[in-house]
Length: 344
Image (cartoon, rainbow, N blue to C red; front, side, top):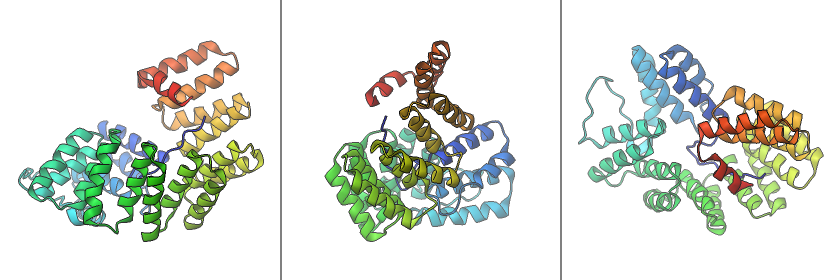
C-alpha cells in the first residue's frame, strides 16, 4: 500500500493545508468571507503554502474593502514572488495585458484556483514581453507539474535554473519532477544541489522518499532524521519514518512515529490516511475505518480515502457499505478504479 510522494517547494503537497484551502474556496463561493479569513490564519509564515495563503487573504480583504489589510498583504505578496513582483493595486483597475506584471498576477490567480492551462497562457504572455522572469518561468513549470506534464515541467524549470542557479527551490522542484518520472539518480543530484544551497527539512525528506522508492530503507531513515533535525514540527518526515518502519515490520517504531505525528497535527489528512493504512496492514480494520472517517470529516472529497475505507469494510464483510464508498469515490473521480489498481 505504499504511495510515496515528493513535496514541491510551493506546493501543494501539505495535505492538511490543502484541506484548509478547499474549505476556504467553499466558504468564498458561499460569500462567507469572514469565516474564510479565519481559516487562512491557520497557515503559518514558515509554511511552503504561505504565499498561497497571502494571495487568498489579499483577494478577500480587497472584496471586504479593508485597505490597511490589503496593503499589508500586497507587501507580503511582493516579498513572496521576488523578481516578478505582484502589484495588487486598485482591485477595480482593469488589467493591462501589455504589462508583464499584470499578466503574471493573472497567471498566479489562475494557478491558485486550479486553472493551470489558463495560468500557463498568462505566464507565456508575460514572458513574451519580458523573457527573463525566473519566478514566472518557475510557476509555469509548477503549472505543468500540476497537469502531470513532468517532461515539460523539467524543461521549463531548467530555464529558471539557468537564470538563478543558486535558487534551492528550483533544484528541489526539479528533483520532485524527475522523481515522478522515476529518474532516481538525476533526482538525487537535484536534491543534493538544493541541500548544498539551503539544507532544510523539505530537501532531506524528498531524498528520503527517493531512497524509500528504491527500497534503500536505512538511507531513507537517515535522511528523514536529517529532515526532522531541521524542523521537528514538519509532519511529512515523521510520517515518512513511520511508513518505513511499517515496511520493515518494526511495528513498535511505526506506532511511535505515528504517535509523534498525531501530536504535531492530529487533523492532518496524510497522517490520518497513513495511520488508517497502517491499521489495515496490521489487520485492525475497525480502527482503520475510524481514521479514514476522521479524514473524510475534514475533507470528504478525497476519492482515494473512500476507496481505502471500502477495502477495510470489505475485510469486515460489510459489502453494502463498501459498495457505497466505491460509488462515492467514482462520483469524485470517475477514473479512480484505474488509478487505484495502478497502485495496488
